[in-house]
Length: 270
Image (cartoon, rainbow, N blue to C red; front, top):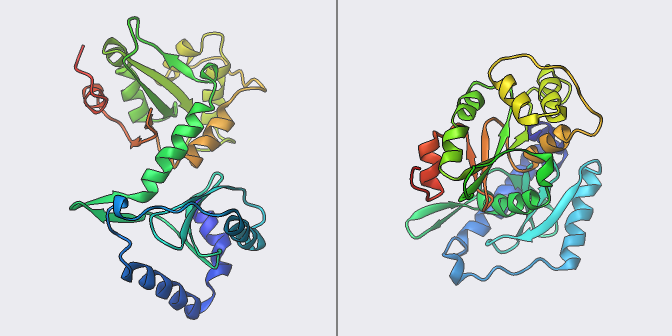
């Protein structure tokens, strides 16, 4: 998606003069004392007039894309705009220039990924809107101490490895909530498989069977949430599986052993 987006946005950067102008803008920003600790630089909310100008500028070149809320960044003159099913954009001023990718703040002797920090808030808000009955949930028999949200694929080796550790996670009080993310896309065989699990009479058993390389009856019901969850994962910055989203919106890409996940969640082994 990001490659497609960059391709579509080449009209913003025609020739070296535009690149030089863009780099000059960044140089001016960096030259100012904007990389200091957040507490020393109050983040000013983006005004409605400026939001309107930014959206007008972006839509004039890319009318087919949907743009989310426009948020302030710690850098004066630069706002953040989330493209639906696309990247997080950093937009200068009223939308004359933008860039995507990671943006870091240097503070307290360490680097802070501002893109990841912004996306954590986005992920948390998006997760709160997903009905629990649209996920395939594996809950502990005892009290739930923590929750992990896992974007998964049935044709993914490390997803299978993580699924084998679900009983161990449950034993430690960790609830596992699965969301579908068929890496090959919506028109793939993987989609047919995972959608059939979501549509099965017993989704937990069907998903487990697929992860054990067993066949299940193909049953792609019309109201399954797989496509919606796949698009949601892209919006959250998921580009591979497994991808684990914690309750605070932070993303842990790739496989993590059960013991490591428990440590991250602050839970001792059960």
